[in-house]
Image 1 (cartoon, rainbow, N blue to C red):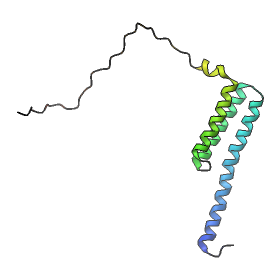
Image 2 (cartoon, rainbow, N blue to C red):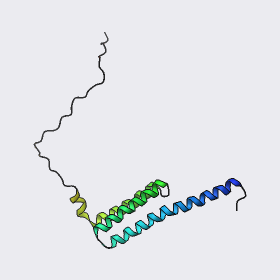
Image 3 (cartoon, rainbow, N blue to C red):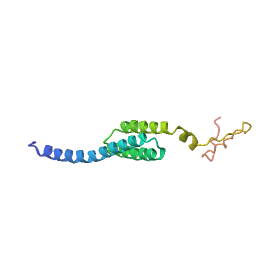
Image 4 (cartoon, one colour):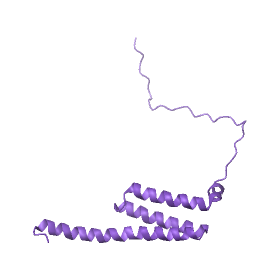
Length: 124
């Protein structure tokens, strides 16, 4: 047990922060476990919903400073990658590709407007 007042206060603060951090870290872990369980069912909709929930929890933990932002990004990337493996056609069907005709003329950019209103006299 600490004898110094500042250290006693610091211990109290650390304990409060530890408890708060456990809530967010535990929620992220639980969401990831639910996502992995949803992947086992090989059904798209529950898996997608679980991934979105896990991403939200990981973002909250990273925002609070409980997880490093790169750690959260790595975990999210792995989850999304696994979701994409379940539904490879979903990502392709989501964005239809528009074909542009080959004869189309290139679009010309408008002339650049200057902010200067008067021209400086030329040096002689």
